[in-house]
Image 1: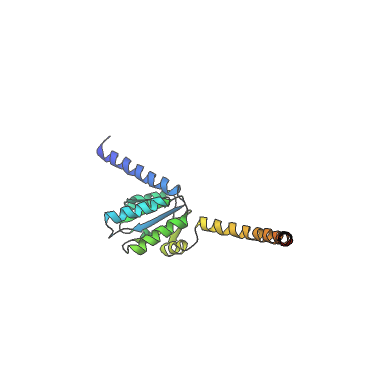
Image 2 (image 1 turned 60 degrees about the vertical axis):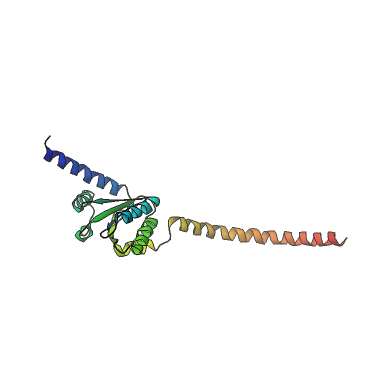
Length: 175
C-alpha cells in the first residue's frame, strides 16, 4: 500500500468517524473558535464535557463529507472558516445554554448553526433553544403541578382533625 492510498484511507476513516458521531448525537453545533487562546478552547471543552458534550476541530471538507454521507442539508456558509464540531446526545438545551453563555463571556466564539435531531437550525434558533428550561427544570415543574393539589387535599382533610384535637387539649388543660 503506497502513501497516497494510506492517506485516502485515513481520510475516509475520519469522515466515517465524524458521520458516526453526528448520527449518534441528538445535537450537533458548528462554532467558530477564531481568536480564542488554547486555554480558552480547553475551558470550553471542559464546560461542554460536564454537560455531556464533546468538541473537536475538524477540517471543513471532512465535516461536509460526513454531513453529505448522512444526507443532511446544510448551507455552505455553515462551514466557512475554522470550524469546531460540538456534539452531544444529552440535553440539547443545557448544551446550548453552556455554549451561548461561553460565547457571551468570550466574544471570539461564533455559533454558526447545527442540527437538532437531524434538522438544520441556524444560530438564532440555537440562541432561542438556550433560553428554554432544561429537561430537569421541566420535570421539577411537572412534579410541583402534580403535587400541589395533593398537598392541598391532605391539608384540608387534616384541618378538622386538628381542630378537634385542639379542643380536646384545651379541655384537658382546663382540668
